[in-house]
Each structure stands twice: as structure tokens, then as C-alpha cells.
Length: 261
Ligand SMILES: Nc1ncnc2c1ncn2[C@@H]1O[C@H](COP(=O)(O)OP(=O)(O)OP(=O)(O)O)[C@@H](O)[C@H]1O
Image 1 (cartoon, protein in one colour):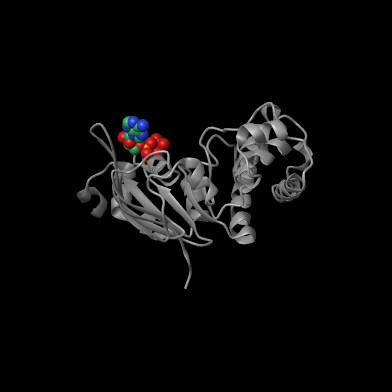
Image 2 (cartoon, protein in one colour; image 1 turned 45 degrees about the vertical axis):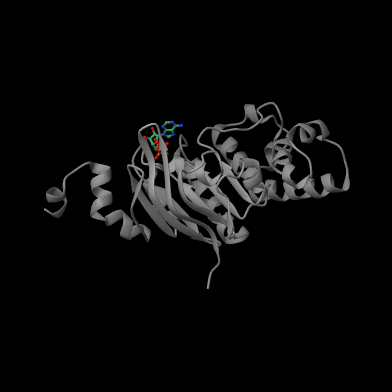
């Protein structure tokens, strides 16, 4: 039997009259690639914000490796092994690739970000071990050619890959990917898809993917949950979800009679 990494049960989140999430239930198994889809405003990013501790749900349970994480601070949850990439790249533009990835390992260094920045370049035993891990990730993501360059001068697709690298540098058990191919051209999208598949097959990390590119979701995901107006519509295999009448209606905004016609 596979092991459950994360579980959401009856999660509700509201903002002054807006119900961002209602009755959200799902679980993700170890090594699984679980996608969340839905039209704009469906609640996808809110799920990530609840999982990573940015928002506290008003109701429901969220467990990560069996531990209740509702109310925990984001850095504590990250320290438990949950990493995240963002819709908008959040890297230190003036630092090179190696240093950006080293900062991803700050949880393994035993001190916080400010000290981590001050200590970049020092060679303690822990730093040497961390540097070795960073170099492995650089090889894995095929970004050797950029390793000493400031991230801000690199192409967008490469920056997105470095952001993935920084998340991987945390050695997470669960990776939240927020629109990893948004704004990418066809070639960059294909590369990113390949690396996401490699993360699953070679590193065995469970992932939750929020993505508007439906082709990518259908190609990559083991299971998909479709949402609309903060509520799950259906959860299942990609092909089942894609053909589900409620999903078609949510995306196309057509009525029941038109779908069954
Ligand atoms: N901080 C906030 N304050 C008020 N309303 C919010 C906040 N965050 C999200 N919402 C509302 O919650 C609902 C769900 O938003 P969310 O960003 O989770 O949707 P989404 O599916 O990620 O959308 P998109 O695909 O456009 O990124 C929306 O109605 C949104 O306006």
C-alpha cells in the first residue's frame, strides 16, 4: 500500500464574503503527481497557500506526513519537507545559480536566511556537503553552463528551472509547482515537462501541480482534481476528469442541456 504524504479534509477558507475554498478533500500519495485544475479564481493558489501555511483555513484538517500543520508558520512547514515554486519567479537576481541553490539548503545549514547569505562562500563541513548536493541538482537540471552567472541575466525558461532547483535543494518530500510553464515557449515547456517527470521517476518526490496548460496536465499527472468556485468538482484519472460534464461546463460556461446534447 502506498504511503499518504498529504491530506486535506473539509478545508474551508474565506475572505470577507468570498469563499475561496469550500469542502476541499484530497490526498496525495508518496511519489504521486497530483494536478489541480480550474478556471481563474477556482481556488488553486489558495490550496497552495493553505498547504504552505500562508493562509490558515477557518475549517478542516491538513496533515503532512501524518502531522497536523494547520496554524504552523510557513518556514516550519518548509522545514518539514514541503517546497514550493511560484507563478512569478522568486530568486535573488544578483546572486549566481550556485548561491541561489545554496540558499535553498538553508534549512539544512542550521541557521536562517540572513546568516546563510552572510556565510555564502565559507567552507565548513556542512557547507561542503550542501555544495555537493547543489552540484548534483545542477547536473540533474542540466544548468552547468550557467552555474556562476547572476540569475537575473539568464533567460526566463532557465530561471524557472533554477527556481525548481532551489526547491529541490531543500530535499523536499512534497513539491508544490505553481504554473511551472506559464509564459514559456514550446521548447522551454517541453524541457520543463521532462524535468518534472525526472523529479518523479528519479527522485520519487510527490508533487502537486497547478497549471493552466491542459495538455501538460493531461500528459504528466497521475490524478487530477478539477475545481470551480472553491469547490472540487471531480477527482480522477486525467482522461476521466477531462471528459467530465461538470468540468466541461466549468471551462466552457455552458449549461447541462448543451453538454448532454
Ligand atoms: N488574499 C485574498 N483576499 C481576498 N480574496 C482572495 C485572496 N486570495 C484569494 N482570494 C479570492 O479567492 C478566490 C480563489 O482565488 P485563487 O487565487 O485561489 O484562485 P486560482 O484558482 O488560483 O486563480 P488563478 O487561476 O487566476 O490563479 C478568488 O475569488 C480570489 O479573488
